[in-house]
Amino acid sequence: MVFFPKLGLDWLNGWILLVVYGIVFGATLRSFPRKVVARLYDRSNWTRAQRGLTRLGKVLSSIVFVLVAFSPLRVGSPAFFVGTALYFLGLVGLVVALFDFKAAEPGQPATRGFYRVSRNPQWVMLLTMFVGASLAVGSWAALGVFVLAAVCYHFRILAEERSCLEIYGSAYDMYLERVPRYIPPGPRSRHTA
Image (cartoon, rainbow, N blue to C red; front, top):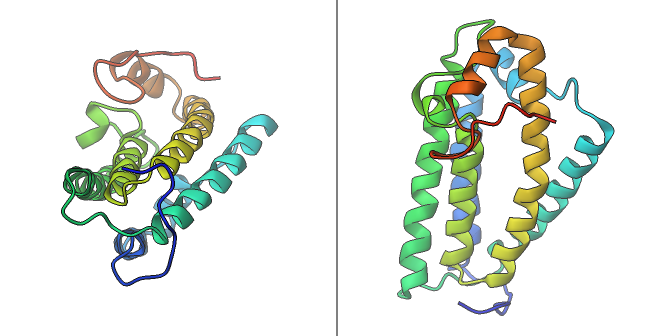
């Protein structure tokens, strides 16, 4: 691992991981009905601050994408093997979580599959995936910027939970009591804003 790898355009760079993610994520969403995709990106009930922090998170994520895309994969290093394993674990987990979300009954929150152990399995899997990508290219800078983006996205998650409370009412309130926000044995915080 290095703080800031030498950036360049090569065939064996982290862009490969980003292209795989783009294809898999895009194909998954294209297979979903529009109503499901609209639910995934619903921003109703968000505060101005939460929208701003989400925008900042997107800017930071874009920086991570650039750092990963133009950094060489550290093929053969222990960080590469651990990072690649985490990346693919996160990618597969993200697809499973998306299908769990899609399977939710209309008018009900997603509570099956990965949603039984985390209220935000898509975010947990994205975190796993991009920590893995940062390790695979051996970049502390990409990892650090991604951690900052994840902090910003935490506020997006708070907004999503508040919105779910307004949409699903007591069904979501009971869900908040049973399932941690991120991963077990995390807090089952009912404070969403």
